Image (cartoon, rainbow over all chains, first blue to last red):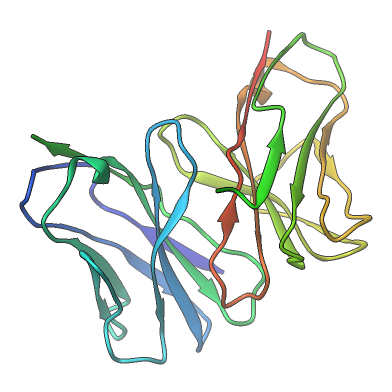
Length: 114
Length: 112
């Protein structure tokens, strides 16, 4: 079983600034994968970034990067040069290598302010 | 561009009616999922399938049922809709358990 904690229900950031969304999780799996998803208002949920737990190198996708601390079971998302289109709900989701299920956190509502 | 399709997009229905929410994907994914999500809230897994003729219940107790007769099709049925079923229902799929989920656009259900 997995549990996920996103401790920041809402955050705001000025356009062009940097913001970090936090996520901690607990899992009994020895191998697993971690995902951040973005859900813009009234739009489709899409993948932001993926991290494999056995890789020490932090994943990066353009302006999005993660800080993965395996021992601390922490998986934070950093958004650089924030844009208005980044306004959305962001969900953290670990997925165990031995499980078909994928558990989501409660989400962080991010608002980018012009 | 969505490769996973949900219909209808919006549905308003009276209490006691039977409804089926459709979900189809064209990617050949084995694993499919149904999540329930109230607006701006977390996602709750209600059903999943890891292949044809396999279905499992998720963490959230649900009065719905699902079927998986074909790889591409994973419909969700409510035998008797109630106002407590008012929510958004998201369908998703992925090819392997190390893959991310692909989501549909969702069905927003209102039961009056």
